[in-house]
Length: 201
Length: 201
DNA sequence: GTCTATACCCAGATAGAC
DNA sequence: GTCTATCTGGGTATAGAC
Image (cartoon, rainbow over all chains, first blue to last red):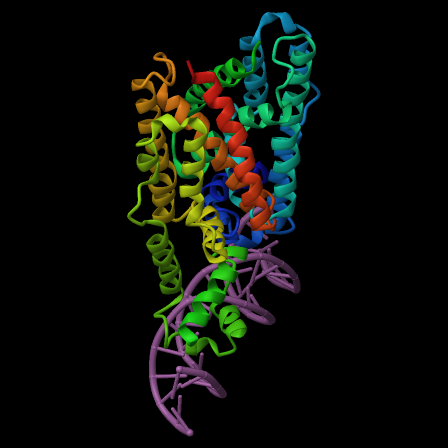
């Protein structure tokens, strides 16, 4: 189906060169049709980008709330949580398409308000709040000290991982996604131990 | 001097809209001359960008190595170091111009190899190595535990601050620089305590 | 050093034949 | 649904008068 091929190739090109760095002509060339034919499938360049964003948001916003689920077994120790949290965070990104679009989000965030707000709320604030809830529960159950600043703990934990992502998608691009995700789990695991070790009773 | 005005306005516009998002026409309009007159001062658009980068690099790469200096007084405690480290990191950025160009670097890093390499080496790897040295000294003087992974400690400390920068320059833009820098010092101070608390003997 | 005028290119998008 | 042809607008850059 041509429409799908356009989307696929647009994801490839946009995620590599950015939205402004790719022309309709270039997309058409790679798809193997003329520019004008694109407009039979999408009303314009912006419409392709919208389709990409809608796909991404549809995939990433699903109905499970894994951190809260994990919190039900608070006795399993901290190791259990960062694994649950990280896995929840990563499970949606394991597809190559999703990784590409994530890079595109990082690229476009500086001048696209929709992307900026999505990153801010769904990717940063949402998870941070999840970790705040978890640390609060841990505090209530005397797993971590009472004088801990849970918001600071959450940010201290989460922002480290966020920068690993930025580093991967921007600074180290192009770098193998699989290899990075392995490294990411290992590093955030070590990082989580540092944070938890500092807070535990 | 017109040449300086061109540079100044280019910094303003590039840092807001990105290099590709600004035209020579637009720069000329804001300067108050015609496009063609720009070429009496700079050989082209790229040359303006080069001048901006050279200015930035000239300002940021100076001869002091503050972390190593700070390490000479290792007995002053950890508080002393993150303050020294953070201040060293921030002192170069206190000018409005430097903050603007830093945002420009974040924006352009995804497709400008020079910027990418500069961020990678001077902004990330350099400071991380400084902290690695410091943590190694602390280990040698039995200030932190012997089984600490100093590379992980350094990244765990430093990447948090890096993401605060990304958040400020991209996600929260436009946000007051002064206010952010205060917040940054407060947050990284708290973060440093968490990291150090986890590692200390 | 600045101006007008212009060359040249590539962008997004549309009309209408097949 | 794809094509050719074309429109319109914006971009960088240059030539040459003042």
